[in-house]
Image 1 (cartoon, rainbow, N blue to C red):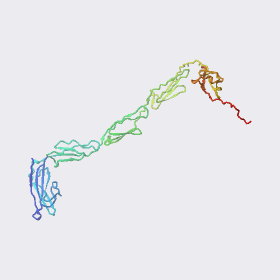
Image 2 (tube, one colour; image 1 turned 180 degrees about the vertical axis):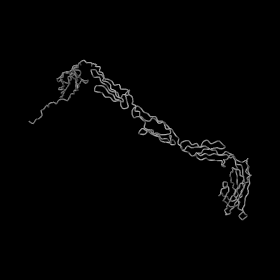
Image 3 (cartoon, rainbow, N blue to C red; image 1 turned 90 degrees about the vertical axis):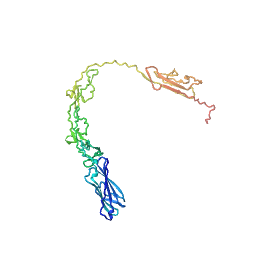
Image 4 (cartoon, helix red, strand yellow; image 1 turned 60 degrees about the vertical axis):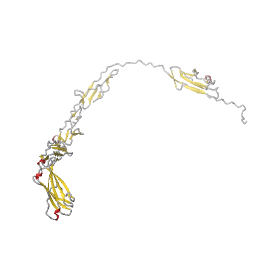
Amino acid sequence: MTLVVAVGFAVVGLAAPSSAHHNTITGSVSCRTGGGWEVTWQVVNSEQRTEQITSSNRPSAVPVGTTFSSYQTRSFREVLTTKPGSTVTLTLGARWSNGVTQVNSGSIPASSFSDACNTTRVAAPTVPVVDECGPGNAHYGTVPSGPWTSVVNRNGSLTITANPGYVFTNGQTVITYPVPTDSNAPCIESAPQVPVVDDCGPGNAHYGTVPSGPWTSVLNPDGSLTITADEGHAFPGGRTVITYPVPTDSNVPCVASAPQVPVIDDCGPGNAHYGTVPSGPWTSVLNANGSLTITANPGHSFGNGQSVITLPVPTDTQQPCPVSPPEVLPAEVRVVKAKAKQIDKCGTRSDLFKVSKRAGVVYTVNGTVLHQGVWLKARTLKHANTKGKRPYSVTVRAQSADATYRLEGKQVWRLRFSTRPCAKAPEIAPHTGS
């Protein structure tokens, strides 16, 4: 139901020439949606001149400085959430453009405010602030249920709005809770348990993998370990940095099996000896008597706490060496060299060649064995070609006579002969001048 009551009257000053200047003020009231009363004030300028409001007892409705044009009517609204116990009056002071001033009022009796428009007052909820350990994480928790709605703003503040028909005890329908203050209390973390790795051998103890958590770690040059808590975290006692001392090494030696060193015993008496010592964490020395001493490197030992072992002089089997029969050498091979030469004069009669006389050498021309050490006519050994002419070249080949000879050096000679004619004697003797 909407109840509207319009009541109004104007209060005019003393009768004077300027008394015509006034504002007619009337007021009406209706139920406001969601509870409360909505008051509407209507103000009418009586003059053909402009005016400006210079005072107002209800500035939330009609602010000071409001202006009116000539004969202008303006409406102003305000909301009341509490039912008034007496008449509600709007009083305005005004100045017109001709300098005339006037104060006028309009009122609404308390009876005009119906109980049917009344709202229910509720206390604003108490919202818990959740501030977990760590920096900058304070926030509002769950808003208690009630006749309101809530919104968490982007900056972390909280706005609560009363439902229609309700108003908070301060008369407001909207309340904003400020951004909660963070205590920045650090989260207390247990110091991580970092394992110490101590392999066999001296001086090699070190810290193993640091468990993951809200911290960083640095292995220092001396072997100690520094762990620093992340921002917003701390270790017991409020410490943010802890340093683990250099781990203590047990210096337990590494146990190695003694190397298996081979014994070399060639045939013959008294020559057994140790071979190459396998590589490992040890050193070895061959003693003058043939025994072998092996010493473990620092941090190592050979079972039973021994760091030095000596292998005894190896026993010789006295295995006799086999005797090879005397070597039978083959008959001696003689090395020989062959040689051929030629005589090439004008014409073809004097074309001769000769092969050197050598024992163990056989010379041939076209498969014919040559006599050695005598001059042979070149033409006598030539076969006619297809044109009936004998070629003027002879190919001499040499080879060893048998397996007891080995031929070295040149073994083939191609002997070429010129065919230029010989000069003839003149038929008339030349004049000699005698």
